[in-house]
Amino acid sequence: MRWATRSGVHIDRAASAWLIRRHIDPQAQFLFITDPGDVPADANPFDMRGVDLGHHGGDCTFETVLRRYHLDDPVLWKLAVIVHEADLDDERYDAPEARGLDVALRGLSMTCTDDEVLALTGPLFDGLYEYHRRGLLLGREPA
Amino acid sequence: MTTDNRASVTQEWVLLSYRMPREPSTPRIAVWRKLDRLGVARLGDGLVALPADARTREQLEWLADEIVEKGGSAMVWLGRPASVRQERDLAETMAAARTAEYAAMTADAAAAAEEVPSMRAAALRRLRGELRRITRRDYFPPPARDAAEAAVAALASATAPGPGMTSAMSQRTTA
Image (cartoon, rainbow over all chains, first blue to last red; front, side):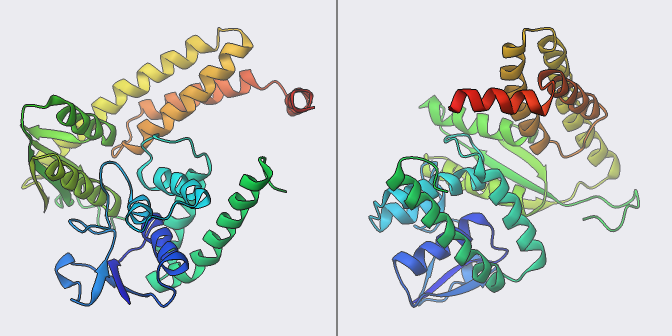
């Protein structure tokens, strides 16, 4: 399936694309567009104004995707807290690592194309997921 | 980002025009607070502006969606002030609002430096967070920013006497 989002990918779109590919659609293909009117009819839009998979009720897109697809894995919700704070910085949650992740993603968006950002951040989110999965199992910070 | 600093060129701004029902007042107040947090220039009733960049544009777009979700109406515009004078006035108003916030922080930091060490550490954490929040909505940094940063740095060096002592203390608490 094809998935469309705005170009100039930042934290919420990079994390949502990772989530879609890992947990919803392994064959996902991503398109980057500038005008919401340019979404092809066969593509599923996300993190754009006025679409279902966007910000709703104070949630960022990553959180909305988790809700819409009924993904209740606590590790994914832990990542959602980090993505939320990195994207919105509204202090709804306490996520000190969000600031660093936000800066890293902003930097990547300056030096890489959108496809490259997704290629680079995929393994990063895999790693974050594994870190928090082990943390949750151990009940403390993993080594 | 600006490559051309000639005074005759105004920059691009992103504007949000919106209208919300008077009642219920909670969503209206929530939007008001979010706009405050973004440090917008209030141009009139239901019209706010920020210097345009990818982040400010995105933030106002999501806020527009939120306003519509809560029963209001909203539109996002891109535009330029028609005169340099107008833009300068706008920038000065925004810088003055930040100056007041930085000045209050500088005073807080100076007052905290007089406190006992445990109070100083708590104040330092709070003030660092506050400084970051103000800096994020500071689009035309005024001189008062340097003073606020210096006051927080002074409080930090007064709070941590030496790395040896702090790590010994944290080791004791974790053991």
